[in-house]
Image (tube, rainbow, N blue to C red; front, side):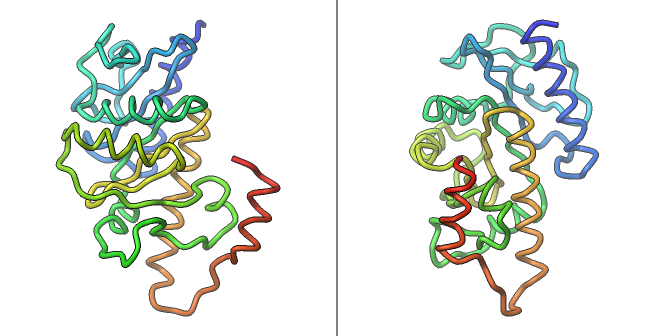
Length: 212
């Protein structure tokens, strides 16, 4: 099986997994991977991640031109923006999962990192989670904001929308997204109770032991 066929298979598998775990619903959310030649496979517009057809997944040039497959997600432009700024990124996951979207709808006093470092795994897989201001779905102006934030972050949260998470592989991006959603869930379960987030020293120790 060649690289493209294998990655198409993995996108179908990952979409089905995320849908089964109720992290994706309806036709919301999109996944992408970058091939060795720089072209991008991205889930098509109005497709359900639970019922993807490998042959219909869109293949785009690095400039966003459709090479083959169905018309791509209307949000493919911000996937391309992530890849432009993160040469090591090979996959991007964007979903509208309940707890993460709930965090994106809250008012935050500071937006540089909107989830506390409650666990080592959140620090390792998600890192800091900046909140970007609201853009309507499909607004191309979002690409510039995603591009700027991607320079220093592998994860971000779109206000009133949901997360964008990148990784060195599709598996890594999916695992990081799941960790983000679990941390968001913990955030609401803990509520106003006194909590003990990891300290700056503990975070530095994790970063040294597990560099991203």
